[in-house]
Image (tube, rainbow, N blue to C red; front, side):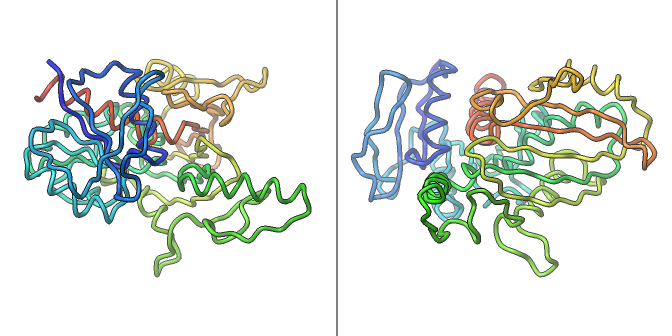
Amino acid sequence: MSYKIAVVGATGNVGREILSILDEYDFPISEIVALASKRSEDKIVSFGETKTLKIQVLDDYDFAGTDIALFSPGGSVSAIHAPRAAESGCIVIDNTSHFRMDDDVPLIIPEVNPDAIADYKNRNIIANPNCSTIQMLVALKPLHDVAKIKRLVVSTYQSVSGAGKLAMDELFRQTKGIYENKKLPPHEFPRQIAFNVIPQIDDFLDDGYTKEEMKMVNETKKILDPSIEITATCVRVPVFNCHAESINIEFENPISVEDARDILRNAEGVSVMDNPADGQYATPVECAREDTTFVSRIRKDPTIKNGLNIWVVSDNLRKGAALNAVQIAQRLISEYI
């Protein structure tokens, strides 16, 4: 059986990646439609290596007869059009933050909580988590199943691609400008991003945390376990693609470094790259365009009981967004529709 698919936000970083992965994974498609705003009407986007699609206008599109819509247009757009699509009988997989914390909308990482996909029937909408949450929980779920996580302290090192194409362009221009003795003011970020790190992603809240940091807190509790205590610091770094995270874990039960390494080696969606003596650890350069989440620097934290530190790297456009959405769609068609 094949399905009619719509990709909403098809001209953006994530939308283009979704189109690429749908073709790469040979998703069973009878028809595919690329949707975006009026200003992108009739633009051409690639679908695989040899095919192209002409952009249609989202505002004018009738979702009746479309089986699955993969949304990544921005939260305010999803707020309007995702319910419209869902009401027409189309199942929406939304990559924005708009629906994530709605009680009746499942928030899904297929390697972590696939059974929750069944709750899509509540509203015909499934939410895709934040990119940083996805890679963290892919790595933590198999450890949580064995030793039960009590508390997490996570610091992220997030690439500029998470902020979109204009952010990537800004890093390129500023880097080039520095070598040409030109200082270019920031537009996409609150500070210069080239040769710098910025301890702010999204807006600050009244308690001093940013929205990005609280996404990691709240989404972890919804997806994995509401009893886990978590604190996060999210930092933008001058890397084009792939997010990295330093995660300190306190478990309720004992777990050794050796056991943790073995558990992760056998976990779905995880690759262990961890031999510091030979310089073996993951960095964004090695992990770009890869589908798995890489775990390195697995080591004991001697300052707390049952503590470990790990280093986690993943391609934020693939597993952190587009691939996770396509994997949800794969589960939908194999198990539910």
